[in-house]
Amino acid sequence: MVIEELKTRPGQWALVGEDVTTSTATLLKKYGAEATARGSKSGRVARLYARWPEGGAE
Image 1 (cartoon, rainbow, N blue to C red):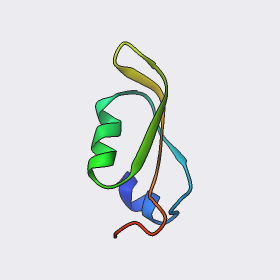
Image 2 (cartoon, rainbow, N blue to C red):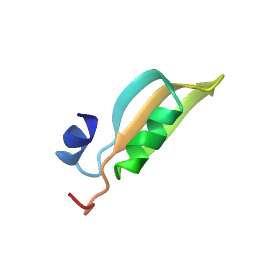
Image 3 (tube, rainbow, N blue to C red):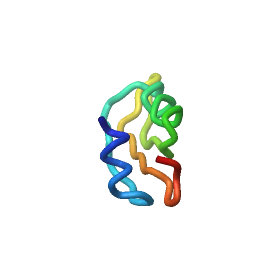
């Protein structure tokens, strides 16, 4: 899962999706990750970046 991969590199941003729905970012945040979207259009995100926060809970 994406969350497990992000946990291996806390604090480093990673491209986790392209042309995905905005709810994908919400789901990542629900699991404790930080997420940001670039280039949204019509409820979709062109690029979705996420990271596990440094010092974040396991």
